[in-house]
Length: 391
Image: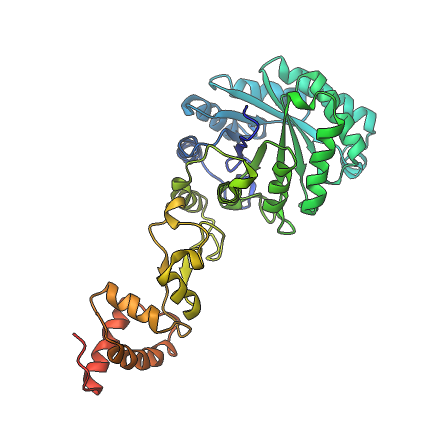
């Protein structure tokens, strides 16, 4: 893999689907999987095959239809999990088994009632067994964000020896600060023998709102895979949002980091996922929210009308949005009113605009947003109460 290429590992169909109420049936998963493949993601985590018969079938069917991406199945460090995942992935053109175990002292003590040495043994055993089925084996060190770096490095070194091709370093609880997470990736790059032969992967949760920042910090410090979901959907506060990390890398070319994502499909893909899962996206969501390219402040509107780049760092068409929206509210100015009026056929002189704007403010104080129908009413009102004819 080229050193500046960042692999996009999409886990919408696995981690994203773990959100309460977001269950998808197999036919829905197949539609989304095809779209993810078209979008250009490198890895599709299709599910957790041993978790249910339905998930097994979904992973198996997705494996049959995906043409370009690696298809991945999640397992615990349990032999039967791994065997079942291998069976589900047997039709995949590029199969990957994703296996692992918790490595933080909290997980070792309270989840497994075990010791560090025994956890390393289980990690080695799981990777070795997975390797007997597929060449591509990803190991996750669950709760790596709260794992001592020295011990984490030891685990990574041992699973590399066992055959792991990708090392997933999850901030499972979303606890890390970006500089801490980046430093953890850097530490592993500098202290794990054989690290140059594998891909380091970021898997960050958004409990403190830092999933995207942590993932970017990870790749800046040497990781070359980001695990993410469409719309940032996922357990609790969600996962790293695919559309956010992709556009951050695209808008900061000096980082010299690229993805294979066709960004013009991002908005439509976002809509597909939110409709399939019944999970709305907040209007102010970055990149794909309804207000991401909408302007209602008069100062901002005036700038955008004169030159889009004054308040927009991205062309909306880059992410599949047709155009920016000038939303008329009581905070809008004359420039915005003139712009929207022209769109529906009114070419106003300065005198006409001044008269229309007075009427506009009266309308705007009574309702949240002024729509095209209201503009027609405003022009009719001006025609009735003034000597200024607006055709």
